[in-house]
Image 1 (cartoon, helix red, strand yellow):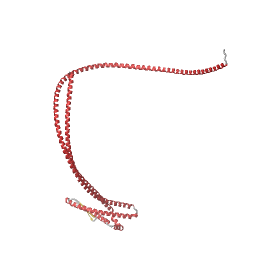
Image 2: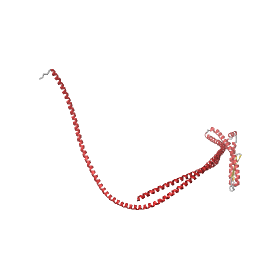
Image 3: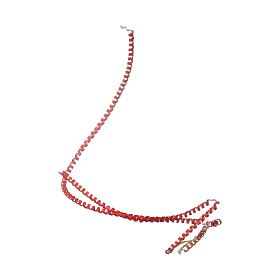
Image 4: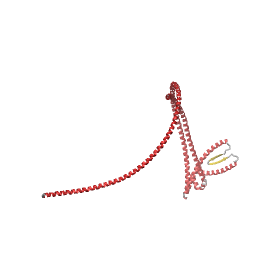
Length: 499
């Protein structure tokens, strides 16, 4: 036995401790490795189990798919067999039909073959006929070609002669037309100069006459305007008086009792103004009536000579007194007409007395009129009161007469205007006729010039027509040559066919 010292023992002890520590470490490492290995083995077993189960499932699916595919293949196979059988049946039927059609086609072919043989025989007979005809046609064509050549030569000679003659005629016609055109142009220029001179003279005379007519028309218009103004002023004054009277009547109805005197005074003044106006109008009317009576008497004397069975009415007014007398010549109505005359004379006498009284009141001065109103109002009312309506009616009647006269004056003015316009138009027409004559002469000259130009254009047209005829003849010659060539070619082909 070996003896160990303490030093060795301690070293051994240390070594043992180191070995134990290593063993403990190796044991722990081995336990960890074992744990991990077990874990991995468990995982692998799970994977293997999963794969095995999946494989089994897939095999089952494959079996089911195999069964399905086999069933489908069987069904497809049966369908195909049926379709093939059907096709075979159809093909057999088609073969039978083809055999039948073949027999029919052979029959048709034989029939057509016989027909073609007959046609060939007919064509051969026609060929023989065509050969004979072609020989005759060749002879005719040769004769026609000779005639055509002779005609062509003659036509060319004639064309050259016509060209020469036509060129000479055209040159002569051109020279003549140029001379005529130059003469016509000179004549036109002279006519235009003369026309300008005459037109200027006519325009100057027309301007002078127009100025004269204008001055006369202006004077007539001024006179007519002056007269119409006077009439309108008189009418407006009468209208104003009428309006004033109406306003006075309205004021009489609306005013109070204490203003009755003022209303009466205004009424009296209006009545007096009316009476004055009536007096003036009566005087003017009397003068007009006297003139009318004189004219009617002169016309009556002329008419009595022509006709003794006409009735006449004569009105005579002297110093404000009106007298009406009707005379009838018929012997049968003498008594009745006498009675009517008596009644009219009584009415005229009463009317004359009333008018004379009214005119006497109108002829009073202002002082006398005021005295009459103040002291003799009853007398004034007895004269004017019952006749006031008649005065107003007479005034309105005469006012209407004045309006009618104004209207007649206006009509006369318009007639004068129309006459002036008519005279102006007549002057214009006269001057227009002269200008139209000159224009007609100018147009005639232009027509002559246009005629000469149209003749020249016609000659040019004839020349172009002649050129077109020449070109047409050339084209006809070419066409005949082409026809001749085509006939020769066709004859050559026919000759080849028969040979």
